[in-house]
Every structure is written in structure tokens, then in C-alpha cells.
Length: 364
Image 1 (tube, rainbow, N blue to C red):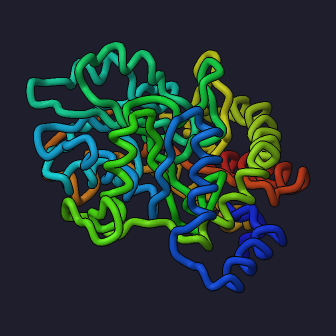
Image 2 (image 1 turned 180 degrees about the vertical axis):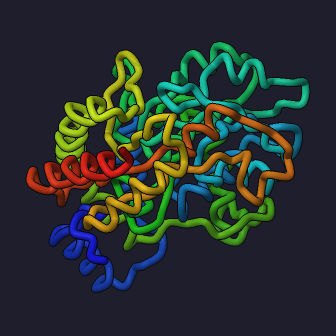
């Protein structure tokens, strides 16, 4: 089948190509001046004192836990997510404790984290799901004494009560995967206001080196390259325009899709969204089988689509934990994603909406 409107497409163009070409011509490919400049831009954009660029978003989460000296106990993680937050908790020697999500925002909420907290809890990873801000201030206030990591992988450019995502928690983490609003191909960053944590993150990402040849702890190589930073700097300059176009597409969906019987992720009061992913839930009555039929129909019509996310209680690497999260499991069973990217035209958007209507009509 031919996909005319892909589910995602990186917003890359002549400026990014020119920036990469300049790096190639310079011969300086590893972390250098452009990485430092990119870090300054990220810190400013997210309202942080420090940004530490790393190889990818998963590395950002792992290094955040290691910098916070989380080596055991339980780490609270929302139960609907890409597996990375739970996996990194396990990698550092902790047990992921999967916390059910709010049925409206699809985020972990303060009450759920409080109910899941035990004497063994050592940290919390609070996810801004699909770029929709979690209520990070409420979560932090409800969990005194626990370090909070804001997993803002999808949320650069989103805000809550005027405060940018990426500015909450002891450390916040970004991803620059091609599915994200701002991409460097792969890449990520840790952001913090703590000078000591920033220093430790820089040591950890670079083989445990405090200064060249002075190794103070074991550490991986999780550096970002100059090539990636060059792309990221261009993307930062274009970020607001890319978000504006994404919002136009998402607003068009929101104006029509609820009337067709679909449930959408709710926007928290006072939040602005970057529209990283646009998800919808089929009616409960048709369940997972109906969701699969909708996705299949959309693909046959040339519209990119797929499942929304994962219920971490159900994936093979974590199912042995024996935990349950009914809301996350039901949301994943009914959820699918629709195209949102800057290459889409108004005609593309209308075509997606029409294809969704036909797919839902086929369920009758």
C-alpha cells in the first residue's frame, strides 16, 4: 500500500543540510563548540541553568537516575509510555513501580503517585505524555523528599501556567528522535538548575572524565555530536513556527473528531501544547478489535496510523512484575495515532479526517 500522508515526517530542509555541510567541511565532528551552543539554547528555551546534551532520550533518563544516585528501591513510572523510563529504572538496579494514568490527560497524576509510594520509593519519573504537560508542581508538592525527574521527551515547546516543559523537577529529560517536534536524528538532553548535578551529568556522559584523562567514575560514552548539534540549532530557531503549524492541524482534528465518537487527550487548564502526537480512542464498545480495524482501514486509504502507546504492565520485559493498570491498559487497547507534522497541507488534513470517518463508518 502507498502511504500518502505519513504519520510523522521530520521538518528538515536546506538550512539543516547547510549546517551539517559546514560541520563536515570543518572536520570537527565530536562534541565541541556547536554542542555547547545548542546546550545554551536548550537551557534558555526551557528556563534552566544547565542543559547537558546526550546521545538520545533514553540515555538522558539513565544518566539522570545515575546522577541522582538511584541504585535501588522502587522508581514510580506512569504505566502508559514507551518502555524507556521503566527500563532505565531497572538498568540502574531499581524496580519500576507502574502507576496508572489519568483517563483524561493520559498522564500520571499526584494522587496516583502518592498512593503508589512506599518506604522503598527512591524516585519518580513524571512523563509529559505526547507533549501534554503533567501537573508537575502538584506532583512535586505531593511527594516531598523524593527526587522528581520530568520526562519531557515529547514536550519541548509545551507550557503549563506559562512555565515551559523541561523546567520542572530535579532533572528534566528531552529527546530529539525523528518523531519528536525538534529532531537531531537521535539525541537528547538533561536539564537542571543544580550546578553539582550538571557537573555529574557531564562527567557521566563522557566515560566518567572530570577533565581530560582524569577518570573519577565508570561512565559510558553518551555524547552528542557536532553534526547533531548543528541540526538542533537550526531546529531551535524554527521551533515556534513548527509548533504553530502542528497546532493548526490538531485544532482541525479537535473540531471534528469528537462528533464522530472518538475520545481525545484532554488539555490541562493553563497548558499550551506542542502537539507532538495526536491520539484518539475508539468507542469502548468496539474495543481493541475495532481499533485495529480503524488502523487497518486508514493504512489502506493511504493514511499513516498505528497504535497509540504501550501499557507497560503488558509488555514482555516488564510483565513479570505482576502489576496492573486498568486505565492505561484500556487506553492503549482503544488508542491510535494520527498524522501531525509540518509537511501536511490543509488538503492532507481534510483527507485524514475523511479517512477516519470512512474507517468508523465501516465499523457499523
